[in-house]
Amino acid sequence: MTDKKPLEINGQRLWQSLMDIAKIGATEKGGSCRLALTDLDKEARDTFVGWCKDAGCSIRIDQMGNVFARRAGEDDSLAPVMTGSHIDTQPTGGRFDGVYGVLAGLEVIRTLNDHNVKTKHPIEASIWTNEEGSRFAPAMVASGVFAGVFDLEYGLSRKDQDGKTMGEELKRIGYAGDEPCGGRPVHAFFEVHIEQGPILEEEGKPIGVVTHGQGQRWYELTFTGVESHAGPTPMDRRKDALLGAARVIELVNKTALAHAPLACGTVGMVNVYPNSRNVIPGKVFLTIDIRHPDDATLSKMDAAIRAGVEEIASGIGLSAALEQIFYYAPIPFDEGCVGAVREAAAALGLPHRDIVAGAGHDACYLSKVAPASMVFVPCVGGISHNEIEDAKPEWIAAGGSVLLNAMLSRAERVD
Ligand code: HGY
Ligand code: MN
Ligand code: MN
Image 1 (tube, rainbow, N blue to C red):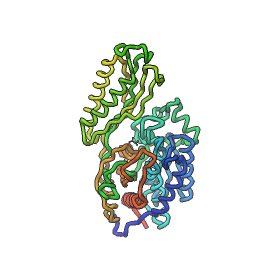
Image 2: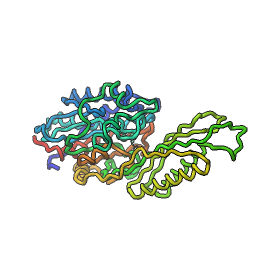
Image 3: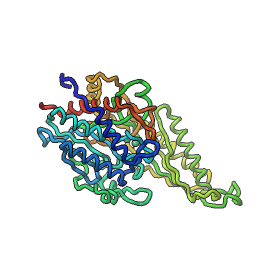
Image 4: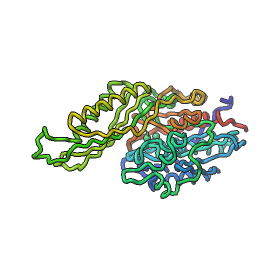
C-alpha cells in the first residue's frame, strides 16, 4: 500500500449505476429477475458494455460469453488485474447479488479515469456467464471453463429445463464470442460481493475479508415409483415417489444438522409427475445442495446422503437415479490478495473481519488460475436470493473503495 491517501470511489455514481441496472428485470417486490442468457441478461450486458466503452475500455467476449472491459496499462503486454462477478440473477433475485461486483469494477475504472491514475498492469472489469446455476446447471460454469475445470463443449452443452443449450442461447443474444475461454494469464483477481448472510451486519462491520470459499456438492435425484389412483390403491400397495422425496428432504436437513454449525443442506427444486391431485406421483425429480468449509466433512455428508437415498428407495420400492452434477472442494484464497484486501480496509479506516464465503462465487474458480480473493459487504438482515435483498449505500461505497485499493496494490500505479 503506498503512503498516499487511499483513493475512494464515487459511491453515489456506483449506487446510481446499480439502480439503473436494477430496472432491467425489475420484479414487483423490488428485486431482479434476469435469468442467464435471456433477453434481460442481454439488455443488462449491453448496458454495461456501453458504459465501459464510454469509460474508454476495449471490450472482449469469449466463447462462453464472458465479457472483459479492459483499461490499458502502461505496459499493456502485462497480465491484467481483473475484477468482476455475474449479472444473471435467481428468479426471485435481488438488486445486488453479482451485479454489484460487475458495476464496482466499472466504478474502479471510472475513478481511475477521474484521477488520471496510470497503472503498469491493465485493469479488466468482467461479467461471468451463468454464475447462478439457476437456468443452466451447474453454477459458475463459465468461470469454470475459463479456469479449466470444465471443457468448452461441456459448458456450451448445458441445457435449461426447455432443452435449450447455453451455446444456442449465447448465439441468440449475440454473446457467443470468438475469444478462447481461458488460457490467458491473470495477474490477480478480486471480487466484491454482498455477504448474503447475517454476520457483518450483526457485528457492525462494513467489510468482510474473505479467506476461503466453502466447498459444495450438487446432485440431481429422480425417484421412479408407479402412478396409480389416489382412491382405490391400498396404502400398502403404493410406490409413491413423492413420499420418497419428502423423506429425502428430511434426510438432507438432518445430515446438515448432524454437522452443525457450519454445514448446509438444501432441496431447492422438486418436479412432481404427473402432479395431479388424485394421482399417486410415479416420478419425482429433485435437486440437493450440500456445503461445508471442510472437505472431509463434506465427504461424510455425501456418504450419508447416498446411503440414505438407497434406504428410502428400497423402503418404498422406488428406483433411484442419483447423480452428482457439481463439486468443488473448499478453496483457500491467495494470502497475498487476502492481505491486500485487509490492508485496503485498514488504510480506509473501515472496520473489518475475516470471513468464509458461504455462497459460491466466480472468484472461487478464478483462484485456480490466478491469485484471488474477495471483499464482502453486509446486506440487510443477511437476506439474499430474495427480492427484498437490500444493502446500504455506505456499505456499497466502502466495498468499492476497498476493491479499488486492493486492485491498485497489484496493478502498480505509475503516476
Ligand atoms: O449457489 C451459490 O452459491 C451461488 O449463488 N451460485
Ligand atoms: Mn452471487
Ligand atoms: Mn446468487
